[in-house]
Structure formats: C-alpha cells, structure tokens
Amino acid sequence: MSDFIPISKPHFSGLEEQYVLDAVRSGWVSSLGKYIEEFEARFAAYCGTKYALTTSNGTTGLHLALATAGIGPGDEVIVPGLTFVATANAVSYTGAKPVMVDVQSDTLCICPDAVQAAITSRTKAIIPVHLYGHPAAMDEINALAAEHSLFIIEDAAEAHGAEYKGRRVGGLGLAGVFSFYGNKIMTTGEGGMITTNDANFHARAVFLRDQAMSKERRYWHEAIGFNYRITNMQAALGVAQMTILDEMVARRAEILEAYRKVIHTSDAMRLNFRAPWAKSANWMICLEVDAFDAQSRGEFMSRLARRGIDTRPYFCPMTSLPMYQGTTPPVAAKKSVTGLNLPTYHSLTDAEIARVGAAVNEELAQLFPQKAALKSRVAV
Ligand SMILES: *Cc1c(COP(=O)(O)O)cnc(C)c1O
Image (cartoon, helix red, strand yellow):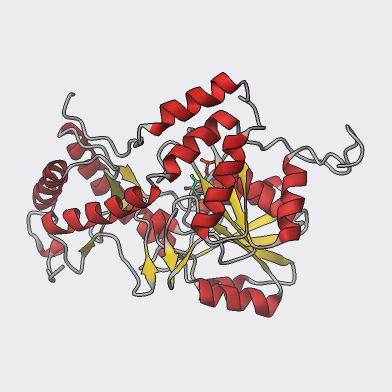
C-alpha cells in the first residue's frame, strides 16, 4: 500500500552518506578511526557525562556495564517487569538473577516502592529503564541505592535527550546505556553507547570491551573479555545523526502535541504521561485504553492495519516469558494488554497524524459503541 504509515522510520540529515563514504575510503572500516572518537566525545558532551564509550549495540552495552560493575553469579539485579527483554537478558548473561518488579502506572518506569520491597542481601544493582522515553523516578531510586550500596545502571536505550529535573539521562547513576538500533531516536544501524562520570569504570569497560588485553603485553589477556566494539562506519552514521539529534527530539514532542489535538482522550483513554519534573524523549507515542483486553486490542490493531496504519503492542511482562516465568506484578500485567504504540518518526506529517487520529477515534467508537468505556472525557 503506497499510503502505508509504518510505526517507525529512520531520519537522515544528508551527512550520513558523506561520512560513511569517507570512513570506507579512509580504509578505517573496523573499530579504530576518527569517527569513533568523535562520536564518543560528542555523545558524552550531549549527556553531560565525562566519558562515553561505544558498543556494538544496546544489549552488549548493558551486559558490558554489568560486567564492569562486577555483577556475576549469586547476585541479584532489580529490573522493571515491563521492558524490552534485553534489560533482563543482559543480567542473565552475567550469571546473576534478574528480579522483576512492578512499574508505576503513570511513568511506566520502575516503581521505587517495589524496588525497596525486592532488595535482599544479594541485590547488587538496579536497572531503571526510561521506558518509551520517559525518565524514571531517579531521586527515589538513587536514595535506595545509596542506602543499600547498590549500583545504578540506567537503561536509556529509548531516551536520548530525555531529562530528569533538568539533567540529561545517562549521567544519573553509575552508568547509562543507549541503543542506536534502526527504530530508536537516533541510529547507527546497530550500535550502543555507555555513558559514565567514573574514570575507573570507564577504563575497566574499555578494557573488557576490547578482549581484556594487557596494555603492556600484546595478546596477554587478564580476564574473560568481549569484543563488543562498534565500527568506524557505524560511528560515522552516529556523528552525522548527532548533528540533528536536538531537532529529532524536538520533533517528537511536536508529534505528541499533534496527536493530542486529534485523538479524543479521557480519564479512561490516555496518550503519553509526562511528570512535571520530566522532559520525555517521546520515543514512541503511547495509547492506553482501559477498556482493552488482549482480544479487543488485537482487533483494534488489525482494523488500523487494514487502514494502512502500523501499530505495535506494549512489551510483554518479563515474567510472562518462558525463561522468566513468574508472577506478573499488577500494573505491568494491566499495561501490557491496554497499551499500544502509534506511528512515531521524524518525517511523519501533521496530515498523517490527523489520518491516524481519525482512524483511532472511529475504530474505538465502533469497538465500544455504548461509549461508556471511553467516557469521562476531560480537556487535554
Ligand atoms: C532497544 C532496547 C535495548 C537493546 O538495544 P539493542 O541496540 O537493540 O541491543 C535495551 N533496552 C531497551 C529498553 C530497549 O528499548
């Protein structure tokens, strides 16, 4: 269908081709080269952190951050019960146990009270995820971490440019981890970044990322390291994307406002929440309809698909997945069936947003003809 509106699409400044070509022509196509250094320097400056180091993707970035913090077998790491699976998997790779706790019903991020209740003598770290671009309640989480001597690793894979009380995410704990997958706010194809203000952490992460080779003796490896490096070609894409990152984050806020103008929200049907202290990166437009169950949401998504509009459901609770079977906490359970994402990408036009909004309003009115389910309308 020619007028198909996808859920996501990358956006390029025009410099990407030039920089990637330059990287190829320079012969520095692997994991040394000027674009890697420049990308790391620019990204650290953007996040307001002292250091940034590139990784092959966000998942390896999370694993590397945990390994650098010394997390391993016998340890527990507290993660939100509603997130992309990479958050929990990265913990599993270290041999530690991911402990899933509930999320807040407004921010969709890890709930500090639930974290507190899950802390044991084995807990070593907490990974708050800034889900769909909204920052987690970092002061409360950092206070718990300080009290119990826990590491904080922010999963900022979806939150480039988001701010917590005026501070960019990525520098709010021991380390932050970003993803540059094709559907994220900025992309390098595949790629990731760890940000930190801790010099020792940074040095150890570089060492482990690069096969843990001794600086003094070549091919002498002092630990089981990894090859989690990015390539200079990907970093060239990243440097080009950095030149338009502010613009891309700003456009996402406009997209949310445009959706707010067309979609008839109410107490029982909401678009993205934003806490007063937060600047969200609005990675994805989130639509929650309290009346949805898995079946009616599926029907709604098929109807939009027939109208050429792509959507996707919220993530599945981690405890519903076969390898993490457990009791799903209530908010994660509810949100995972009532929430879905609408098309969100830089080049989406206001006319396309109006088309999506009208389709959402019409299909919901048809699915819930008695209207009570969608009522108690409030001003947006
Ligand atoms: C995308 C994502 C990751 C993983 O990043 P990749 O680059 O795809 O490996 C981790 N956590 C969250 C919350 C994500 O959305």
